[in-house]
Amino acid sequence: MPQLLRWQSTTQAFIEPLGSGQALTMLRIPAGRFEMGSPDHERGRDDDEGPVHEVQIQEFLMASTPITQAQWQVVARWEPRSGEDWSLPLPENPALFQGEQAQLGKGESNPCQRPVEQISWDEATEFCRRLSQRTGRHYTLPSEAQWEYACRAGSSTPYAFGSELLAELATLRYPSESVEDPRAQRQQTTPVQHHPANPWGLHDMHGNVWEWCLDHWHEIYRGAPTDGSAWIEANAPATADRVVRGGAWSDPPSDARSACRYRLPAQSREPAIVGFRVVCLPGSPPPVLASPSLAPPDRDRSARQALVLWIDDHPDNNRGERAALAVEGVTVLLASSPEEAIELLAASAPVDLLLSDLRQGDDPEAGLRLLPLLRAKGIVIPVIFYVGVLSDERTRQALEAGALAVINRRDQLLEAVQRQLASRATEKPA
Image 1 (cartoon, rainbow, N blue to C red):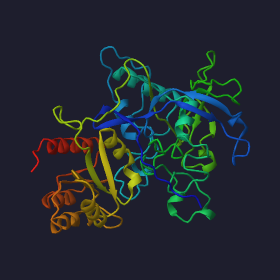
Image 2: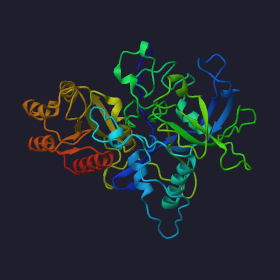
Image 3: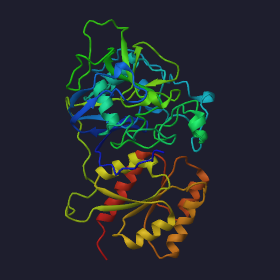
């Protein structure tokens, strides 16, 4: 039985605001070499995955998730500014799984954080063109080599997680006779951070939706570029097939292997199974990667690093948030329960801030009991609740009990943490 592995991510992140509360989290993918394709003995392998060949990849940024319905809607509604020229109209929300078609999961109030699907290659590249014009950066679809390199995240196994996939690792169609977990038989997409990220912080590289790549389709890799660039045929017709990668919710795990590839016409909108994610390449001007910046300018940089304790009984769900805090110079300790947090608070270096969900497991009141528990132990520390779904009543109760804030958006969480740590950094020691 394969095991669910967990990593301490050190990935750097760049946040690209889109407007209307939406943003892209772009993760740094390091330069390196890898063996592209699959060996002859790999189970589920097709001939188009060879021959295996070494590829040199230069550093780039990749979106931590496929483009969501919410992100797509913001960019699709952008009105061109002076100097901008949209080449193609974009439908506001072409996803099938919205409204009554979306069977909402536990804790899911709407499907806006699911990947957008039913997107053609032409529409995906128009999305990238708009981003590039609006930001002055070089956004595009990943090359097939970049996609596989990022998916593998340093691994050489069929999946970034090992030789097999568990139902808790990816949204796919699993054989019913081998899986008891009812989540394994989903018949639609799931929110983009529903499953753990790979070692480089990327979610949904295996399953959920196929993802468009920049390359034209080629039957085998003989003659393929070895520098990580896209394999483009200059004289190919506009309708020529392009590459998709990653597998979809309706596919078996073998179609979600790191090396698996498929072809679709550029104008295709395969029903509810094809989305995309973007990459940002060195260009004009390159984005500045996030770096430690929480301390005020006059603070001694040799002072101890900010320390945050996060109570989370499903820590993989918030890996992206913790990675963003890490690149801001914040050390994050994890606790699986309020009781474990109390022990860590007693044993660890001084903790600046406590983060927690209001719900722990099946107990929606766990967070509300945290605050009196801290008081009973004589522990004075600011508490921020980070929740999946906001409830007016729960929010009111938490704030009345003494919580600093109740937040359900990543950008607001990072801003609140920054503000609180900066204010504590200016406090004079007792």
